[in-house]
Image (cartoon, rainbow, N blue to C red; front, side, top):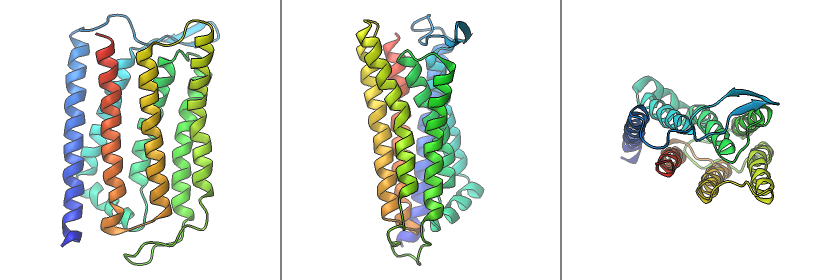
Length: 253
């Protein structure tokens, strides 16, 4: 009985999360379009040496993350993509999850870095690339793990080396952001308390994703039980993106 209910529960969760994220994206985009809130860009300009490359309101980036997650979840709830994802889950493969996470987490970390005053394009690209690379190591980890045996928990993977490498690379962007906060604080031009709190909150979400992935890789399950990780990923992604977007908008009114 549980087997027949679980896929529908996952689909309901995807539709609910996608609709909630989509509604937030539309509302916040309307707020931007009406010109409410702060008129000055909330981001410092992205620079290459002394040249300004671009300057974008960070709230636009937050809306993009919300919309990207909403579209991804709603597409994943459709039958073709849903069936493909279910086949992957049966083999402990989460390719769709990693595609979504590599995009949204990289963009979010990129924006958090800019919030903290990092403007050099080389550093920002490094932060984006390191976050994406961390996700690729999760794909490698799943490929190097032993095959599942029926519907029983899989043995502990032969090695979690790929996951450890991913964690080592994934912490680099946050280290760069921390050094930026310390250096700017010493110089007397540090970020506001709101930015510091939001940075800590996003780091906490990143750690929650990492712990969830580590536990899932160490106790590999297929079928219904294997979908618990998908449920956690959807909920964490929805809450993290919502907190980030609303914190930005409320702090700039």
